[in-house]
Image: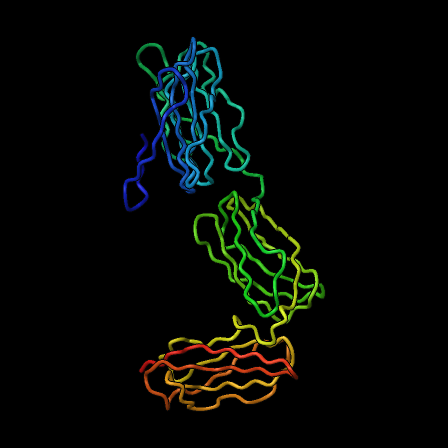
Length: 347
């Protein structure tokens, strides 16, 4: 059984080693991605080996992996994790101290002997943070305490895993989710560009470790093939710049409903703003009503060009605290689009 603290509560995860022999000397640590790395000694036939098991949130425990794979006895596993989330495993084997590193991007690397004292036994390794390790050296008193630290270089650029639609529509909001296999230094940049070079930048937020959401309102771009581009830099100054193709299309709606809204809503100021987008040139009327349907005023009644986002400010100094309705009507020839939404005024 495994218990870990998530910052608020102790959580329990069922756990069992899949080997048929004795499992002992377990050592576990959680990284910044909430993955749990578990190591232990296992009495496999004829000798002891170091085994590893990984817990991933949402998918559970992976299968057991034999990391030492030697005819000698491998004991006393101890681990640490550096700021890049590389996992450093140390253990005692045949009087030597060995190290094996799990690179945060490329996985397990080859093992190395770090004590290099074949005539003097090295035992009892201990590590807890940032790849520092100490062990006891000597077969008689006075024993020596040896300290060792050597970080692996980080030369692999991050990789983005992007979830985005194949097509976006002018006049709609575009939501894109993406994650990385590395910790980034700051929030990545993301923008969409059309085939004539016009572009729109996304608002990107990190909603959990190394997982991001970008949002942008699509307007003023040419229809056709476009590029969705994301760039970022990790803490080792490795950069990534990823581009995927996305089709930019017109939704056909004269004034898309998602593009028409009032803000701030509710408003505590002396004004409220109305924002809307038009796919083509149209005549726009915005009317204000009470909840009972009584029309208070007509705020806008004029022509606007298409392919633009518009923002119009209306005074509410003559309106009391209440919920109101605005009706936006766009007309272009025989095409007509009506949007009705609520807004609040607070005094």
